[in-house]
Image 1 (cartoon, rainbow, N blue to C red):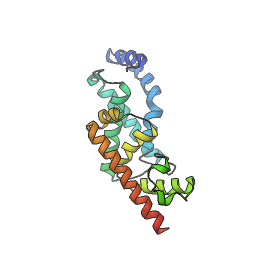
Image 2: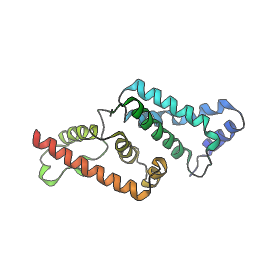
Image 3: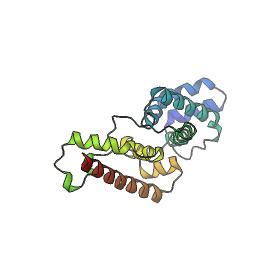
Image 4: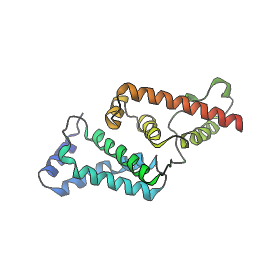
Length: 184
């Protein structure tokens, strides 16, 4: 579903009113920054990448066909830009205060004695070991509440591939958490 304000701003920018892009930046800056910050815990890097996302969005706004939501299109730019920047710099960061999954999703029955806070600490450690593209997927799905279909559009992966990757990530997290618990 398209946001009417987005479409109006986009049409104004396409018609040559460059200042109309500031409405788009205002509407989505926090969303983009938050999603980037989930992967790169360094605020300055996240700010730089966020700025790069909006520069790319501005330059390629003429290619936005309005077939999907603008936010989905912008997420895709954020996704590709973030992964590209990470590959360039070989940076693999994640925020220290994540709660992507409920702790019970990755803990087996034998670990039920652990309280929620301890489970979340193990979950945070396990998430830090994921590659950036997997962090991005769990961020979109669990933190931002994006549907599998939207994640498919954003990432360029098929819907079934997104489902499989999320399932594998949950399994990977469960194994890593159980390994961390046993080493504790």
